[in-house]
Image (tube, helix red, strand yellow):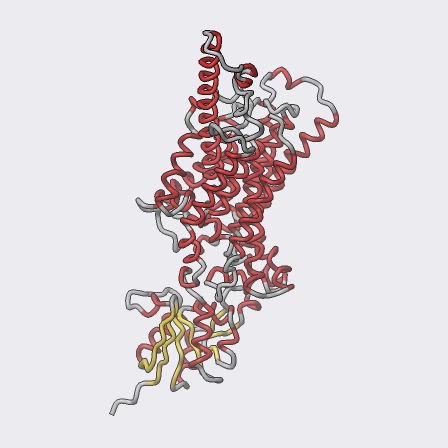
Length: 571
């Protein structure tokens, strides 16, 4: 099949535009949640202050903060915070389409890219001011580069160069240059991706499985191993530093029984109307009788997409049963495998329908020819004279003639696009709900607005625990003029996320002179079961609980604002 560049360009560009449009819808939802707030306040620090912070916390996100620094320097706002993720998600949709077009044909790429774009999980992280959409783009780009590097390593014929005697054959200068450039580009993109988030290193496991399933020759394995080894060397310093900051993921729990099902629905679609057909198409893509097995050294959609879809989540879930590290956001990049497989399954369905149609037309032609030779009269049928598949109903272009009597070019392509449109419409309520700020764990803008309405200039504020200060750091206007009683050194200067607080004795002295104090608390911090290890946090609980009584309370999702006044002296 001859693939025209304009077809590939359209197949890539359309998903990019669709993903960008979906991600742009409701991107300014009126508030940041806690993780986005960390990005917002850290990326706006000076470069030396960011570097100082990474030595003690959040090293795993260090490169992302550095990339976001110039973005927020230009325009420190919520849309600017999320715009890189939106662009990355749009790029990922295009890269998925490019993969499908390269491994199969342009319409497979178009379908895969559009499926990725309309998946609610992709839309969710397209509007998150965190690194996960960028990681997904890096993984998709590295997978496409792997396919190109394998082709260049095989001499550009796309068959993988199965003859191992080619190891010692002389290689032309241009071919050698293309091979080196291809693998360097692959290794460079993977290295940047794992520096954006170290759990993306699991993509190497998926790529190794791809090479094994495709039965690649030793030369390809050798070049891939060199690139993968370089990536691991680049990752090693980050892994060593982040291992000393393991308390950052202490909130994670071992995956439960419903983890796999939730991830499956996130990858394919949360509604039953989409989930069933989606899984059926994936099953068709993995069913061998539809096509002959791939030749040795040849990549196909299943050999690339199946390891990408399964291995990173499976590996992280398996490790997390003993050392909890799993969260679905950490394997967002594996989502790309699902639409590729579904699109490949749709293509096999189309080809099967075409074969049935051709067989039926051939049988009709033979029957008409037999009747004419039997002397039943009538003019000769041009379709029968032309031979099977070449008459009026024959295939006049990619995707045409797939339904008898339909001669419109690209009918199958348009039918697939229509099906994806219906899937998008069925998931519109999910997408609309996801744009509600209440869908996030908290909304720090609401907390800041409540503080602005109820606190007066000069009012003392106590954050319980210290990370409750994130609302004031993200939206300082709401706390303007108030006094942060426990703060000793601001966050940017101290090289911490939320600032360095004073010691317990000094905090007792400061609280002793107060008649009232506002407490901005996390809900768990006001429960009797919470027993903090930090002595300053224990003093907060003890002094407020023993010497003050609550006067007013305002509850917002994820935070509680409570006014305490000093107890009346005992008579």
